[in-house]
Structures are given as structure tokens and as C-alpha cells.
Image 1 (tube, rainbow, N blue to C red):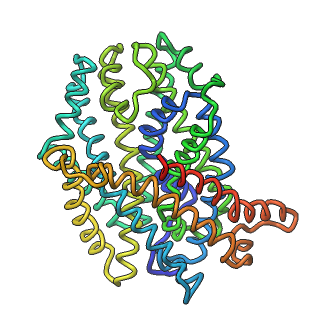
Image 2 (image 1 turned 90 degrees about the horizontal axis):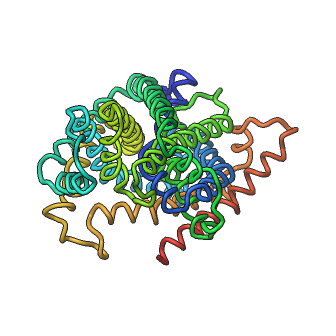
Image 3 (image 1 turned 120 degrees about the vertical axis):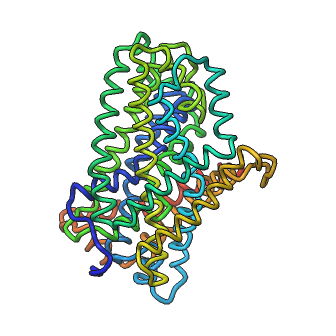
Amino acid sequence: MAKDRGHFATKFGILMATVGSAVGLGNIWRFPYQVGEGGGSVFIIFYLIAVFFIGIPAMVGEFIIGRHSHANAVDSFKKIAPGTKWHGIGYLGVLTGFIIDCYYCVVTGWTLYYLFLSASGGLLGNTVEGYSELFTNFAGGTFMPIVFLFMVIAITGIIVSFGIKDGIEKTSKIMMPLLFVTLVVLAVHSLFLPATQEGLDFLFLPEISSLNFDTLLSAIGQAFYSLSLGMACLITYSSYFTDDVNLSKTAARISIIDLMVALLASVIIFPAVFSFGMEPEQGPGLVFKVLPSVFSQMSFGYLWSVMFYVLLFLAALTSFISITEVVVAYISESFKITRKKAVIITCSIFSVIGAITSLSFGPLKDFTIAGMNIFGCFDYLSTNILLPVGGILTSLFVGWRLDRKIIEEQLALSPSKKFIFNLYIFSFRYVIPIAVGAVLIASLLT
């Protein structure tokens, strides 16, 4: 292992940091509205299948690349396949992470604003229309959204500048347990709401009419997005793993925790939505436009509102940190500059482009690319194209190009577990490329 790169100090730190990378707005913001639009429990069943047959193997593949090379996303491929063009996958991953951060910082800023707003009592006593107008006016502003965006970038920059062990790991050990405790408390509270049974039925009782190919593709896409696959995050984080970390067990634990967070978030949201007469198919506006009205009608609504937006902010921030680390590691190691200088450069760029992205809801809303504003363009390009392309190429690289001895060494499987090794190879070569390729084609055709 390169001595000057740093590494995670403990296995618990590895788990918390990597879970923090995977657990984000994809779980607490995106997953519930995908469930709502996908018909509830059928989407969850497909999602479970996608996580265990696609997500975990894809994660292990990225872990193998990162831990073997102990380098940033680009240099990882250069070390493993020198003199080839495979390092283009690393550049693609860094680019994907960069584009995601340019709009993710905007949404993370929204979560921080709503945390401040809920703590000050500003999310109580309004109507659904009023909350919708509140969000629209805030997001379309020219000053406050950018202030909170800059605050988020500053917090992230400080944490990342302290490095892996003293920055990301220590912070994750605090933030992730706090996130889990908040999740459990809110979920238990939701179980005592008037329409709890209706909400749980929606989540866990299959509705045959929702059984269709589009729901399956959405579930696969959500699993890929939620687990932070295809954006070089897990390659970068695993490059800081110590050699005694079991990659398969770590991937399984991360995926299970990630799934639990998504399900708990849904248990929090849907009993509340049904209890107060809202519709589950609310789309992306669910947590900013609908839930404030729900909290406003609850007993002790102030407490539940503050706790939920603490949860949302922590989830967003941990993922933003992980994606920022991808870019910082690449800049620092490729241009031979200190981590702190790389952080300053990265955060400065994010501040400028993030501010422009934020303004696409206000003064720049009429500027469109292919009919989308800047925010929507970044989101579509990264989520619908770059992520699946990166995932497919990474899987093909591990399955067809990577030396089998490297895979065997990193998986540390005994001869009696040869069948598991062959399953991984089959998944890398065929299952992941075909499944994710179908998602990519579907997204391009819609």
C-alpha cells in the first residue's frame, strides 16, 4: 500500500464511511418516490432482486479494482492495465462524480436550509399549496440557495481536507450512527399513526397490476444509483482499505444496511402520507413540498420535522463527501499537489458551477439544453447515461480483462468456494452488463 495516501484505521470506520457513501438522498429522497411511482411493494421486490444479483457483485468488482491498486480512480486502471485505454473508465468515473456533485451540492444545500427552517419553526402551520410555493420561491432565489450551497461545500471541504482517517472516517463514525438512530425513532413513531396499516400494505403487499418491465428497470436503476455504483466512489474508497478486509462480506453488509435505510425511510413516509390524506405518487417534491404539511398536522410536529431534516441532511452530506473525495484524490495524486490544495481547487469549482446550477431554477431557468435546465441536464446526463455506461464498462473490465489471479487474491476464497468465484465471473461478464444495458437503452428511448 502507498504509504503517503492514508487508509481507514478500523473495519467499523470502513463500514461507516462506505455506508455513508452509499446511503444518501437516493435512499431517503429518491427511493420513497420511486416506490410510490412504481406501485409500492412490487418495486421493492424488484429492488431486492437487483441489489443482491447486480448491486453486490458490481460493488465487489469496484472494490477489487480499488483495493488491488491502492490508487485513485484513473491510476487504478493504469496500474492494472498499463499501456491500454482502460483507464478511460477511471476518467469517466471522475467526470461522473464531478457532474453529480455540481447539482448534488444544490440539493444538499436545500436539505440544510430545510433543517434550519424546521428548527426555527418555519415549517409549521401552512398548507400543501403554501409549502409548494415556499419551496419554489426558495429554490428559484438568487441569494439564499447559493448561501446554503456554499455552506455545504465549506463543511465538506473541511472534512475532506483532514484526510481519510482524521476527516472522512472520524466524521462518518459520528454521522452514520446518528442517522441510524434518527431513522429508527422516526420509523417507530410512524407505526403509531392512524393509517399505518394502509401505508405498510402499500409497501409490503404485492400489487399484481404494478408488475411490469418498466418497474423492473426502474428498480435496477435505483439500486445502481443508491449504492453509488459507476461513479468511482467505491473504487476510491476501497483504495484506502487494508488488506484484511473481506470484500464480499463488506459489500453484503453495505447493501443490506443501504436497503434497511431505504425501507425505514419508506416506513417513515408512507404511513404519514396515508394518515393525512396525501397521495403516494408525489414524485421528487415529496420531501420538500408534501412532508412539511404532514409534519405540520402531527402531534409534536416540530420535533418530527427537525429530526427528519437532520436525517435528510446527514444522508445528503455523507454522499456529497464521498463523491468529492473521488475528485480530490484524482487531482491531488495526478497533479502531485497536497490534499488541502486539491480540496480548495475542487470546492472552488463546485462553488462556481453549483451556483450556476442553482440559478437554473431562477434567473437562468429559460436557458435549456435539450429542453432541460442546467440542473436537469446534469441529473439526466449523470444518472441516465454516465452511471450505467461506467457500471457496464467496469463490469466488463473485471470480467474479461482483469487477471483472474487478482480477483482470486482479492476475494480470498478457499478452493471449496470455487462456485462462488464462478458466479462472480458470470455476473461481471453477463448479468450486470445486460441488466444495466437494458436500463441504459430504456432511458435513452424515453
